[in-house]
Image 1: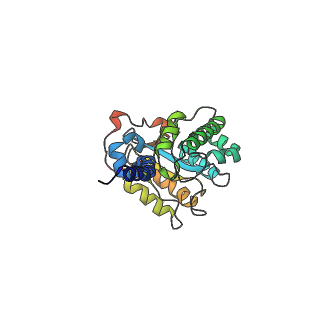
Image 2: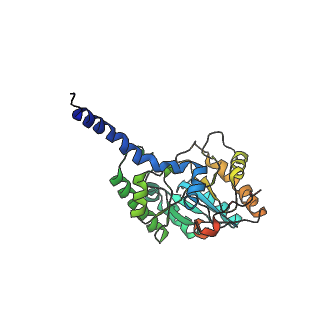
Image 3: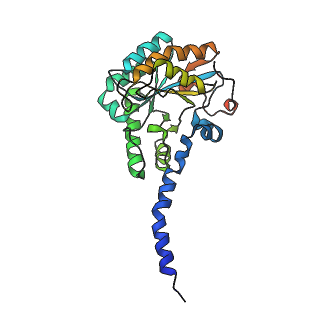
Length: 256
C-alpha cells in the first residue's frame, strides 16, 4: 500500500502561497465598475441622486494643482482631492492652499505603487503615515481613502480600517492619464457613465500619467461641470455626497 501522507503534505504546502495570493488580491475584484456599483454602491461612490461628487487623484503638484484650484474657483465648485503622502511632505504649501480654498483633502496612499505582493504591515504603516501628513495640512483628520489604481487588496482594506479611513472609488472617469487624451475625449468619457449620485475621477497632475496629460482634464472641467448643472445636478465634494445612504441606491437617468 502506497503511503500518500508526504505527497499530500507537499501539495498542501505548495498550494499555500497560491491561497495567500488569492486572499490578498481577491478584494481587488471591486475594481470592476459594474460589479462595484451593484454589490458595493458605497465603495463605488454612489450618493445623493441630485449630486455629483468631483474628485481628483495623485496630487499635490505645485506646477499643475494651482491651475485646477483657480479654475474651480471660477466655476464655483469645491472638490475632494486624494493626495499622496510623499507629495504632501514635498509640497505642503500646495496642499495647505487646497484646504484653504475650501476643498476636501483625502488620502491616496503614501506612494503610487501597485500592491501585488502581500505586505500588510507596510500597508498599515504607510497608510497611517499618509493620513497623518494629510491631516496635518488639512487641519482635520481625513475621512476618505482611494488606493492607487483603485486596487483594494485585503491588506489595504485592513490598513484603511486601522487608519479609520473609508474606502471609495468612482462611477465615472475621464481616462485623462492617457497620452492621447484631449479635453473632448475626457468630457465624452465621463459623460458616458455619468449619472446622478455618481462620483467622477479626474487627475490634477501627471504624477502617474503621461507627461502633461493633466491639461486634458483641466480643459474638460468646465464642460463637465456645465453638463452636470444642465442636468439639474449639484457638483461638490464627497463630504456633501451622502455616500452609501439607502436613499441614494438607485440609478437615475443619465446626466446628459
